[in-house]
Image 1: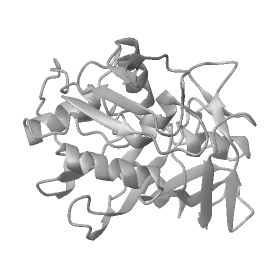
Image 2: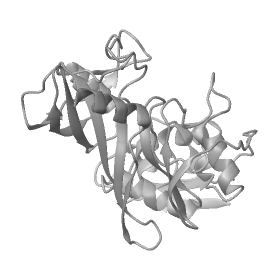
Image 3: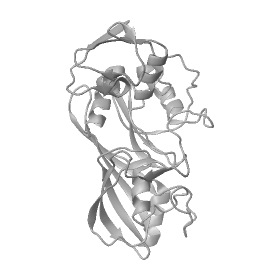
Image 4: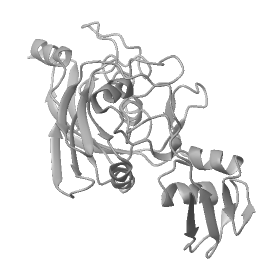
Amino acid sequence: MKKEIIAEIEEPKRIDAYLSEKTEYSRTAIQRLIDEEKIKVNGKKEKSSYKVQNGDKIEIEEEPARETELKAQDIPLEILYEDNDIIVVNKPKGMVVHPANGNPDGTLVNAIMSICKDSLSGIGGEIRPGIVHRLDKNTSGAIIIAKNDKAHIALSEQLKNHEIKKTYIALVRGIVKENNATINMPIARSKKDRKKMDVDKNGKEAITHFKVIKRYQDCTLLEINIETGRTHQIRVHLSHIGYPIIGDEVYSNGKNKWNIQGQCLHAKSLNFKHPITGKELYIEAPMPEYFEKILGFEK
C-alpha cells in the first residue's frame, strides 16, 4: 500500500522533517523508511538530508504495524475515562510508559494491552501501541492512550498544535518568590551526560508556565502548564531556576526529609477535544497517596 504526497512548500525543507509534519510517522520512523528505500521522491530514492521542493511527488510504501512480542499483563490501573476510541488512566509513580531495554515488561503498555486486548492503535510501525504522549517513570498522573489509528492521528495533531492543555502539580525545594511566571528557555540533550537534558541556547523551544498554590516552611507547591513537551522539561526548567522538584534524583541530589524517591510531580489534568466527536473533555487525576501525605505533614 502506497501513500502519495505532492509537496506544497514555500521554502525547501529536509524530507525527514517535512514528512514527520505531514504524516503520522515520527522523524525516526521516516529516516528508517528512507534507509529501507521505502520512500521515493519523483521516482528516485533520496537521503534523509534531501531538501523537499515545491511540487515534489513523494511516495511512501506504508507498512503495517509490526507484530510485537509485548505481553498483555494484568496490572491494576485507575481508569479515569474510556470509550471506543480512547482511554485515559492515572499512571502510578514508578511505572514506565512503554517497554524498552531494561524495562521489557511491567509497563503501562503491557497493562493497557490487557484492558484493551487487540484494539490499540499500532500506528507508524512503532512498538508503542496507542501511546500519544509520555510521562516520565516517576511522574504520576493522567495520560491518554489511543485505541485506533484515527484517534491516534487526531490526538497527535492536537498535541503538535499545542491544543491539549496539560496541568501538573509539583512540590519544589525552596520558597518561590513570584506568584506566577513563565520560563522560556530552550532545551537540548546535555553535552556532559547524554542521559540528561539541559537548558541550551541551541536547543528546541521550551515554555513552562507556573503559579504558586502554597508556600510552606522550606518548599513551594506549584501548578504548572506547559506549551511544549520537551523531554524532562518541567524538571529541567525548575532545577535551572533554582527550585528543583523534591525527590528528583537526576536534576537535584534527590535528598529530602520525607525520604521520597523520585520527583514529586503529578499530571493533574488534561483538557482536550475528543479525537472523533470533537467534544471538549476535562479529565482530572487524583493525587497519589504519598503526595497527599507530604502536603498533610506540611499543613
